[in-house]
Image (tube, rainbow, N blue to C red; front, side):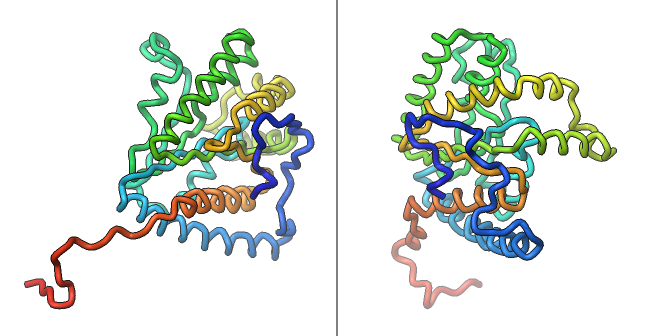
Length: 272
């Protein structure tokens, strides 16, 4: 997965990152089925590791999902986290800030949603909205953006130093793929509720978003909180990569099953 990791302060060009990439798996029925089988194994492994995380209760995992509209944030959560115990997992979604939230610093509402120790937290969109959409729409200046980027890095460093592993994923789709997904959403009566005319207006700003994403990902990919650019045109490959990254993040913690209570002889213990 190193090829998808954004190096700190790298000069990033998303145009050189292929959203159709499927790694070692060919985009054929056979390749797709092979990848799906591996994904099932990874999801099972993720469930095992999450149980250890919950049992130990001294570390946490934060998965940040960002991407353009229709990039698959909801679908990624639905599939990759399907084997995780809901008691140990929480999803937070960040929409337009309320008046109360606007009365505080931009990270105030975010800190409240970070996962507790023993938990996996998922941000469906995140604190990065405050340096993405705000910059594209010129709601903040370049100076304020630079301040916020530094504050975000310090915030994530604080979380990492206190035991939270941070995994940041940019779901990379092409403009043509977004068009196809929006059209499919319009055609399917069961999915029309997802359609928002505002998505079409944001689509007109595609080039602006790509430029800002390049700047933000380059500036905030760090050793303790790296960004990964995940090819997301093929949903089956997207799921495999994110599942693999999540498993690796947990395995890197080297968590062990906690010892049994002291003084109990389980060989002779009888339940009446």
